[in-house]
Image (cartoon, rainbow, N blue to C red; front, side, top):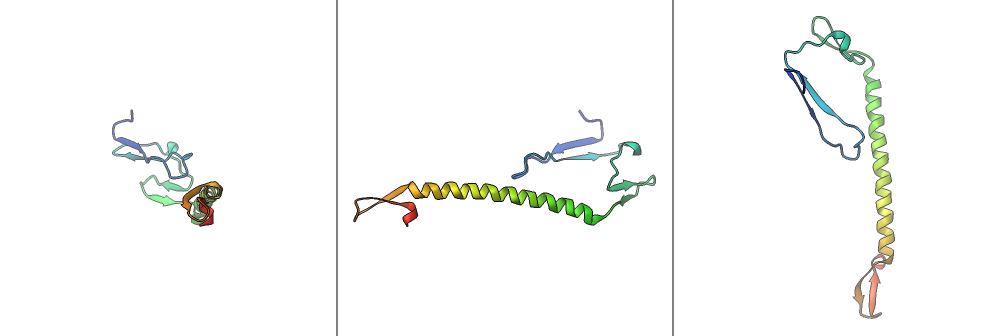
Length: 109
């Protein structure tokens, strides 16, 4: 159980990106030692002011790269689904053709 003043939760599954587990965390009147804060790209000064550190373009490029990987993964899944659908429609027959007295392949439509 979290300490008093600490609330946390899960954001739930991400569409197509289930390997990441994101959550949220809030503090209400809780003191955290500065040595225990993860301050690589942002910093809280001793006065309590929030400052961003590092190059924002670098942070953006990391997020952009992650999104590109997600789109590529979706592309492969869509290609597999399209292949399955095309193969199925090449052999599936439907609706009786009066002239031939047999069902026509879906792909012939």
